[in-house]
Amino acid sequence: MVVRRAVNDGECLPLAEHLRGSGLVLRFIEFMDAGRHNGWRRDEVLPSAKLRARIAARWPLLPLPATRAGETAERWRYMDGAGEIGFISSVSQAFCGDCTRARLTADGHLYTCLFGATGHDLRPLLRGAHGSETLLRERLADIWTQRSDAYSEQRERLSVIRIERADMHVLGG
Image (tube, rainbow, N blue to C red; front, side, top):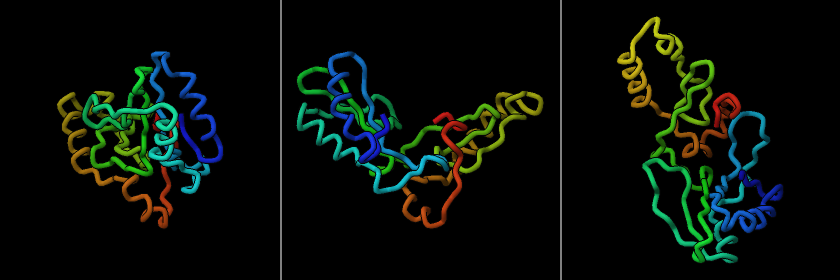
């Protein structure tokens, strides 16, 4: 659930209550400035720590270890055994340095950051006409090792510059 202060943050506790004990894992994500059309404003971000404190005041929580490297959600379990809950804090606690995610669009462009403006065109290599699996692996490694995008960590400085970004529906979030 994307949490936006004063828009849907009042629904967080009822949703958590509804899903507790269901076997489903609820993940809350801070309202992000992804794309160009979601009307993002910093003052509408409800930091995960505040939401977690609100939930923990009702149902005490215990932290859980990450299940894999680069995991974006901080995982917690209800002390009473009623399940797990998670928080993705990409605005208040950027995790760019540990990011292991890339996104391949339907038109064959690789984005190394959810907040990227442009991708790397892999269509010729993906179609196999101009490359092989080895060339594709080499190109992917080259792109990844040379990446310098860390938008969430650079957000405050970059917001003054006003970067255009691809929309989530293009990237597949």
